[in-house]
Length: 111
Length: 112
Image (cartoon, rainbow over all chains, first blue to last red):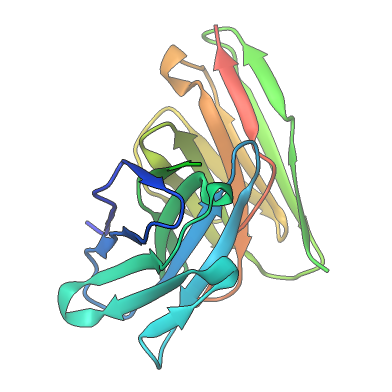
């Protein structure tokens, strides 16, 4: 079955620390990959997306993600987190009109 | 610009009662439409999606059904609610096969 796995359920970091959130997907065909963020009390919003081309994708707010096809991975990174990055992060892929999400990673930043 | 409307925002229903949640999209034609349930620690679970009028794909067998009577209308229904149907339901739309999801405001359903 098609799935998206986010192995880190809750990550706690100090401000200025580097961030990497893992994401693996199971589908072997063509996929489009996304990261969304949900700030407390708000809707999901798109951070970045990958369709094709350069596997290193840059998004909003200093986030980036790298698509590694051989590992079925699309990990999210940020060199230096801020307190305002406290949120829940969801990895997602779409294929043939189906859009599937991972279970989410809650990120807490200590000021 | 495109907008998505989902209502009601909150709903409290007794066990065994029917359910109808409605979602409509404006500003686009032939969108893909999606129903998700969001639960803490479980992310967004895809329940149903539709690529056209009358076309419904069900992802998780359960006590719910979906219908798409018009191009930009997507309805989530149940004939008899269970306690386990409580949760936060999100409608979303997308374009074509390469698509991100655009979400509605969600409905908090509590079955009592």
